[in-house]
Amino acid sequence: MAASLPLGLWSSAGLAADRPKRIAVVDWALLETVLALGLTPLAATELRQYRRLSLGKTLPQSTVDLGLRGAPNYELLLTSNPDLILISQFYEGMRGLLEKIAPVASVTTYEPGSPALTLAKKATQSLGEILFLETEAQKLVAATDKTLQAYREQLNSLGGRPVYAINLGDSRHFRAFGSDSLIGGVVAGLGLQNAWDGQTSYSASAPVPLTALAKHPEAALVIVGPVASDIVEGIQRSRLWSALPMVRENRTVWLGAHNHFGALPTAIAIASEMVQGLKRLAHG
Picture 1 (cartoon, one colour):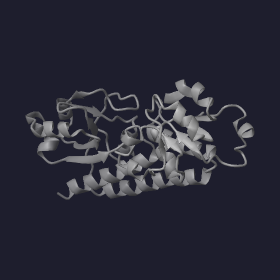
Picture 2 (tube, helix red, strand yellow; picture 1 turned 90 degrees about the vertical axis):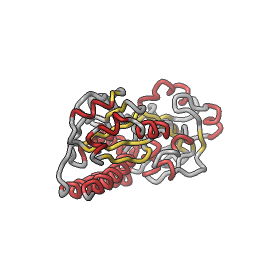
Picture 3 (tube, one colour; picture 1 turned 120 degrees about the horizontal axis):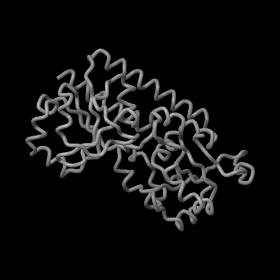
Picture 4 (cartoon, rainbow, N blue to C red; picture 1 turned 180 degrees about the horizontal axis):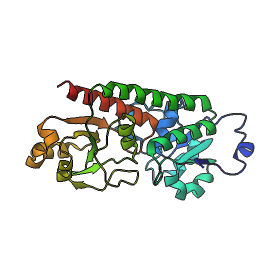
């Protein structure tokens, strides 16, 4: 089951007749989905970091920053007086403390063996049910499918290349996004072949040497931020980096800073940047 609520939440809190308005969110994937459904969260976690991401710029300044996702400020959360607290399965360990403040709803965002993009759609629909925004959730899922289809048609005319989608760990290592990650799901949704065939367990792989990119020298390379400035400076001085076929032959696309554990809004944003970059490569 994608979402779980304390028994009797609706009747005891009176939410069946009146959707929750003061919502606190711990998980970033849920945060961006709530915003996409048209709600402004009362409070959320690690907002200084979140606002550095591409989607973070849309977060209103009125949302209270609760501090770390793994250790939110419970006193501040209590004084914020939320109607509902949203968490993912990653934060179930703090449920007991959170339930002393307000009702808690848990939505699964990632799990081993489940395609991340498919699970993101289910999570969106679950949030729609919890927040009485089923129509908005259905529209977001449909818009995602429609957008990926349109982008896929644009790329069909360019001819296919396998694509490495990676994040740079340092100037000599990278993390690859496999088929079970959200970014890998975007690659597949765009009709592209993922050049990375190693295991990722729904996140990026453990850092591997840049030399592994030579396994598919014909591939295009898509680098998903954030990437620290010192890493960029390091690879620009790296002979190893310059020798990679996809770098030497200008088949590299740099994307902005995104949440690697994001939801449908992140998927759409990454797809948009990826398609624009690949089209630029195709047209020289």
